[in-house]
Length: 181
Figure 1 (cartoon, rainbow, N blue to C red):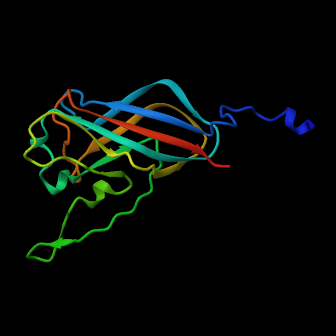
Figure 2 (figure 1 turned 30 degrees about the horizontal axis):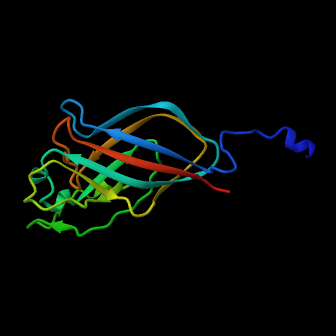
Figure 3 (figure 1 turned 90 degrees about the vertical axis):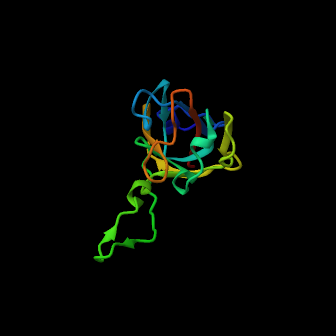
């Protein structure tokens, strides 16, 4: 052991577990069915530059026939303010008869997480739980050392509209933080 090692910060990471997980459980609250404002049970300390991955995203809906039958509802748009998400977007620009560009809400998905929906067809009227992202970890962003005590943001459909109808519905999102070496 060198003299330099004595002064090294022991940090919060362990040699055998270079990753941390964050599980979010969210339900609509009151009249704002998009706002996310969750306090963590324990502060999440990120000691070193880390990559953030979405491991899985699961939803519970009380009435599937009301939700997933339009193109706008084919994906969830998730914004987490504490993550520096850098995602570009492109799409077809439509014009009105005067030649003016018509907004297609592409700005709504810019720098946000887009999660494709594995929802059932419109004929499903029962309550159901569905795992939308569960087969692989999806890279979200990198995060510098920080301490997270609260998660804020919003969730919506592709057009920025509500995708959850009432307080009994919810999503679970599991994020994995992997420290870079």
